Length: 118
Length: 114
Image (cartoon, rainbow over all chains, first blue to last red; front, side, top):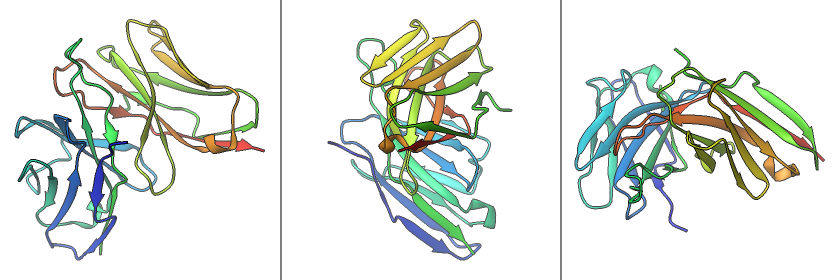
């Protein structure tokens, strides 16, 4: 069964350093997302990406964050200068387009990358 | 601003009985609702969904009910099995072609007692 894969599973970084979280979405999906979950809190939307550009971003997704689809398979989230409060699980997700309704199918999530900023 | 609320942080149910997980929402623009199941150290796994044009959707042991007037949905699992023990997230999206971002509730931890 196709799945969304994320690497690394755990990343420890020093405050102020740049990190890149990587994701390989399901191959025929067209819509890509990043979510995060701070320990003990709910899963929060960060950004959605379609047709090589950001569709929507939340207020969490400030200038320190960027996303890229450098080739046909990878989808990356970069945090330029990490802060302690960026410590969280980061989930990548992808979804397809329902040709019948034009809406999306359900989003499929990766296993997550646990980011720890020290 | 909690647009999707799961007021029960935890629920314990005997194996074989029915588990009922509840979810309320405030945004009347939401038209698609999903339930995800999450095990520790894993990503959310899609379970079942319902469009706002329906009031019930069934898939095996899982049934989701939607009451639009009350802005309430529930997930029924029957019979409950030990493998159902996990955190369940309710999620919702509003119509936005090609960009159906999900708004999640805070989750309910379901424990099935053998």
